Length: 294
Image (cartoon, rainbow, N blue to C red):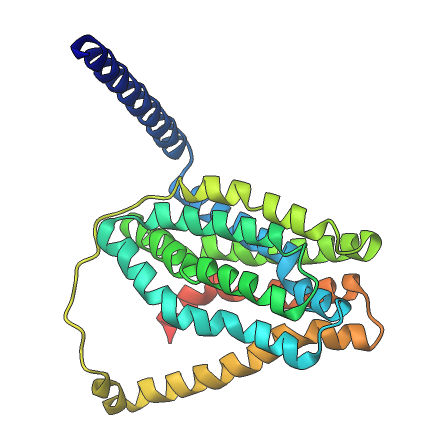
């Protein structure tokens, strides 16, 4: 009995050592790739891949819901799930990522969760079966942009890089993908959209692991919410942002459905979204200079 216990203990130690060696080798490989690629390139590559993958799916999903036979009210409910869930989960998950230095890890898990959810969305055919998957997708997507922007913007600040020059590649990726895949979905239908959309997130997960984690965020005392009302300029910005967000959300959510109602196909929807995304590029490129002059 003592001999078998020693053998089992030895085997367990050997397994743990092998597992640790594999993990160290993977970390060394990731660090090697990270040092090979410049910080500017890594940040730009993440935005290019991420927004490019989102354009495969995002501009067309509400049109797909209508084709399933959902009503406008049901589509509106599915759309409203994301901002409501984001209010509940985005801040706690982002704070946890900052506090534990798990930004890259949580970002990769969230991206993998979205990939899985997009794949599963091909199966439900009714409103009630779509709701749980939309909630799940909203949970996974809630911290992604806040964590990614935090990683890349802080890296740009540490290294003196132009953040807008990296972020504009997201607009380029989104515009290009919306146009290309709009033409493809018009030709082949929505059936392959879910598999292609989920697979497109695989390189995004890889690139997310190449970003610099950075130091632990310093905890600061939170000022009372009443301080916001004392700054009239800030209040005006918040009110303006609120109404712009409403109008933008309405446009993004229903413009594809409206174009389909008018007789347009997926190519027209993709082209319209593409034109909107391309219009952001100049702002992303020269936004910092404009702000400095103002």
